[in-house]
Length: 115
Image 1: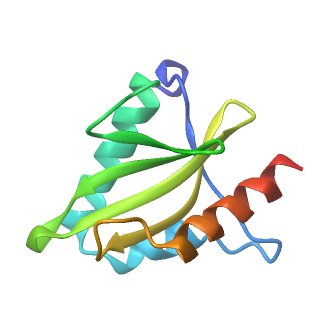
Image 2: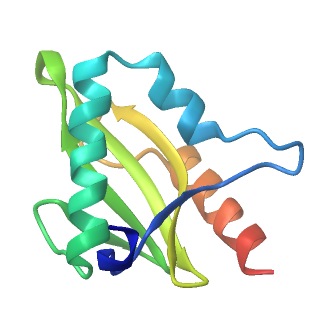
């Protein structure tokens, strides 16, 4: 089934081997994990995918936009590297605009995987 994916997802790993997005997902409820996983799978199989599911953040960064429980909004930021969707950072969105620290963290991780 992996052969059908146009852009398979992979978790970003820190130099110490931690996978921050995987750890973040484990903290969520099963229903929220399932919803975000379905949205990531839609992007994997249908890449390129536009709004409302996926949006470019510029400079090679993209976000998966998921509506999860209790009216919350989750974002999984990724970059494309080595023909993979590398999941760099994820968070529950609390404001209309993407917080600058979250954007900078994802951008720094994207630079790291590009080198």
